[in-house]
Amino acid sequence: MSEAFKTQLVSLLPRLRRHALARTGTVHAADDLLQATCERAWKCRDQLQPGTRMDGWMFTIMGNLHIDDIRAVARRGIAADPDLLDQLADDAWQRRMEGSLALRKVLAAMQELPITMREVLALVTVDGLSYREAADTLGIPLGTVMSRLARARMELLRRMEARELTREGVAK
Amino acid sequence: MNKFDFLDETLMAFADDALSEAERAMVASAAAGDARTAARIEAFRNSRWVLESAFEPLRGAPLPASLTAMVYHLGTTDSNVTGGSRWRWPDWMHVRLSGGRLLAASALAAGLLGLTIGYEAGGGAVVAPAPANLAQLVHALPKEVAEVLERTPSGDEVSVALGARNARLLPLASYGGTQDWCRELAVSAPSGQGLESVQLLACRSTAGWHAVAVAEVGPHGSAGRDYVPASGGQDLARALGLGMPIPAAAEDVLLHRQQ
Image (cartoon, rainbow over all chains, first blue to last red; front, side, top):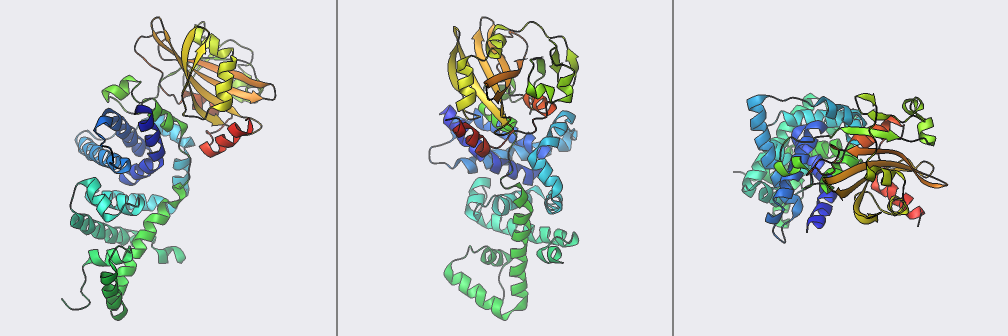
């Protein structure tokens, strides 16, 4: 069970890291959240029911931890780990992010959205979950997911247009 | 509500191709006769495009080996068990360097070549203590260790007998390519005082594998402290000019080349 669990977890790491990045906006914060998520999942691995999709289960754990983090940061502020920032200099994701103006602008715009909008955006449009899967992951009604998602996408688009990053903007 | 009034949620679902055929036909008909509805649908398509294309550069980007190693070592470190501080990178303790082609190619190593001194990441050179038994065993690269380096993908842990000790060997990462293949390997074995762990950086030449560096990980002989995947291997690999770990697919090619 343990080794199979880890193997499955490793196979999900790229998706989890991308989801964490969409949530947090930086590779540094994403890795912090990702590690905490993996540790929590490991501790709770016996609670993963047979037949449950592990990706959704991990997204749920990450979402809960992220909300906790947001509350904690609101209380105590945030402090970057200079060692980790230094290590990220050689990280392929970090380099690609720095090389992509579009990604940096989208991440910045997403960070301006409320977390409830950001997480549905991440699950559906970044991670490719269906509306129903996102609703199950977040534990909220389908209609709420669609409502939040529609508003989030329009809001994001408005911010992207301000940054000239719509399809038309790119084509100019 | 007139025939053109649809909720944004419905128009979004149309744009995402998530409606039933009947609903889809109704919205399509409305969009054909109403520019505002059509524009709204296009806006939802555009928003999806913006997000998907923004994240596209990350597709296929290799993960740092340390992330994978972190998962494989869940449950083996204090921080994992206690849920304490996150992403803790252990100290890269007292690395014993041995001579080699790669060392000669490195500005850092050029000054250390042939010297019995250690290198402490971020802390400069220090005098190394006498190597532990496990470090000596690993540094000698017995055939059991060489076999793991030659055959075992990173992330796959195997148990082997090293002398009279049962050791766990976990390749962490590969560097380089066909001409300069190097690997980072974690080795741990029970000792009288707990679990002894070392980390090996070895490189392959036509003559076979040779140890470039062996590091003791964690307080020497400390009870209850297991091996912790370290960035130290990457620090040293970087210092030696090896760059970043290669992706799993590239490593597979190297492993299969040897079979």
